[in-house]
Length: 307
Image (cartoon, rainbow, N blue to C red; front, side):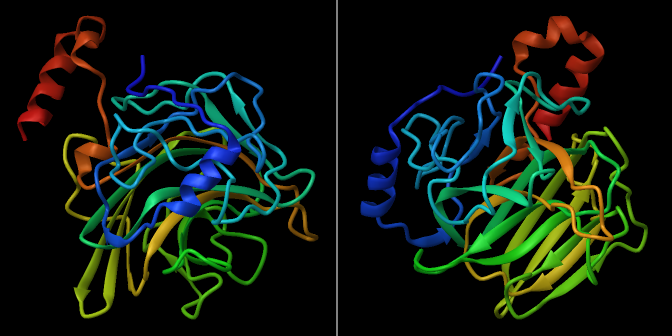
């Protein structure tokens, strides 16, 4: 079961569309989803031009062709090596999952790969979610970073990263944290008052709400870890206020071995969702699955949709 319709284009066609289609800054439009529904064992690199999922275009429209692919352009990739598709989704109770999952292995070297949204985001309210699991016990960095660059040229800045931050002065000790502007001017590790440990082989749901221009140029990121899906919680796990500028895309990242911080990071990422509401990024199964899930789940999901 999946919400997407796979659309595949050559690497040249995708690059041409990205280069010739102007992308202006505005609130996020529509929604986008990536469930890694590619054949198991497929490498995710700068040359494979994987462009599945739905909504990866300026309108965030699932009925239109995707105009971005993994690794095609900035946010750049540390190498893209050691990243592949595995069969079977990560799972989280009540969340719609489908397709495969991305395995990120930095044993050979630090590795990362990113994808542009297809639209620039600098106003309104932007929601995102993803699943992640650490599969090797280490404090090396394993996270998802969001990038900006107003005009789409040159090297983008990492505005913030979410996950395990490790291997240096900015170390979250294996807990979920936010690293702000790692390559910008507001370098800083943000830790929650009561931290949540990534643990090992545990699938965590990460949900973020980014409100732009809440006070002048100040933006507010509200982060939720393993939340209930029925409604947006009143209290975030962590809140960060700063200027995040213009968001253009994101990347998965894993840190390689660097004494004394070993072994290298390894983990899995899955079910990336982007949209403009809590419900858009925490999708539930379609009504056709109610008979399988049972009447109790049916009642819960129906109540959520009414709310």
